[in-house]
Image (cartoon, rainbow, N blue to C red):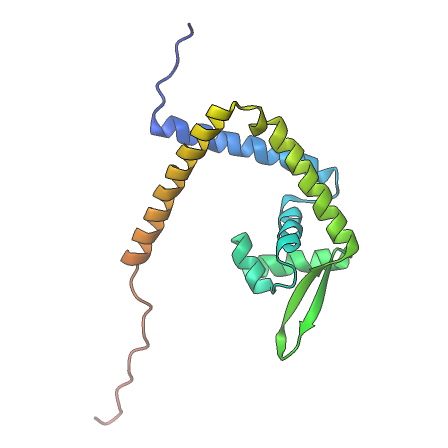
Length: 168
């Protein structure tokens, strides 16, 4: 039996990162064959679930800045995949909708993604999937706990200091 390195937290962390990079690169290549970037696919697939949302809401769902979403939406509007529609009573925001071409591209990407998942994670035994799901869920919970701890420790938003009256 070959010598195995002990599974330390650092080793698991780096293996996880490398696995993520490999998966991302492979999925990126598949999406490129469809004429999409990962970011474009993320946006289009999100709109299949939440059509009519604003760019602000979309940015929150994608965990990116409004500026990043704005440029991406601009390019997808130019490509004929997304349509901006005015929201009655709100002159500053627009509702985002998929065009027929955008929906086709999103569904093609989702099909490619599903096939990739079946070819990779789908090859694991049911017991391995259950164990992996359990471990990842617990790991996610540690991230959430750290986020809550950081939020609790963050200083409150600084209030503007009251100005002294001159001559007082």
